[in-house]
Amino acid sequence: MFDDIRPYNDAEAERAWKELIKHPDLIAIFKWLDVPILPEYYSLKNSSELQDIVGRKVLQRIFDISVDGVSFSGLEAIVEHDDRGFLFISNHRDIALDPALMIYAIDTYKYRSVQIAIGDNLLVSPFATDLLKINNCFIVKRNLPKREQLLASRELSAYIWEQSQMGEYLWIAQREGRAKEGNDFTNSALISMLYLSKRRTMSISDFINRLNIVPVSISYEYDPCDELKAKELLVKKLNKNHYHKVVDEDVNSIITGVLGKKGRVHIAFGTPLRGNFSNAKAVTCELDRQIITNYKLWHTNLTAYDELYGTNSGVTEDERQMFLDRVNQVAEALRPFIFQMYANPVKNQLEYA
Image 1 (cartoon, one colour):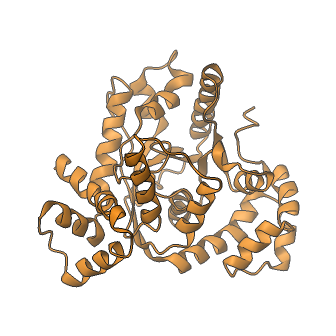
Image 2 (cartoon, one colour):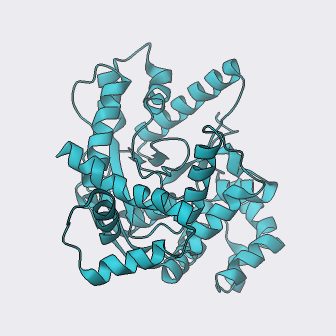
């Protein structure tokens, strides 16, 4: 059951790994990250061994290259419950780093794996499919004909419910596509999809209370893809909100997001959603409230807000100039979009306050 969307089981992972470890693309990735392929890597037998022995080294290497420090808040109150599964729903800023940071955070406190939701648009080759499904990713099918999309959404809903009730940890982004303007708002269709398989047998309040949804706010001091996002926003503005992705655009965004400097990163875990919810919109409102208000504001956010709205948030002159120097390196037409994407988390937080 769920064979086309679930991660690989141990036997499948072992079989796929034997091919992947010899694949020139994987060899290139390890070389690119300056991570040696050790002899014992060839005899790894399941997903847990792969993540324990290889995954941590690769992830740590990525952080060493591109992150100045990772901090957490709120997680210790969640992971003390050994018998519960959780569905973590976070804002979405980076294709690869958002889920990687979730894995790192949970592993740091709990030494547990997290199943990661990824769009089928990332399954660009058999190599990519094997690599992702080995690493505990489950698939979100998109852009299908209407009836097929409904069936796929019901299957995904049933899978997430089953896994969460079995005590698994899962992560999914609050919306399809990254929040390129810095507005971390949940698409209520996500909640409707989650509820789809149980809507005939449970009230939405009972469902949400049992699913153990935890809102998560991931905040980067610097977004390494800010210029790429600004270019897309400019094209959309000039072309009546129309934008066509070029070949390998997602891959290029992943590479830039992984290796680009992010400065400091903070991951804030909220409290599991509890209460009486009348509909998907009510659930969305509580998710948004926690994600937006728990978001850690960096000097980059405050400086951008000050520049746009003429305020004084108290950042130091050095911090202010550091951010302005970064923005001034990009084309002038892109700068308003960059200021806005960094300023919007401040603006949204103030609206809640």
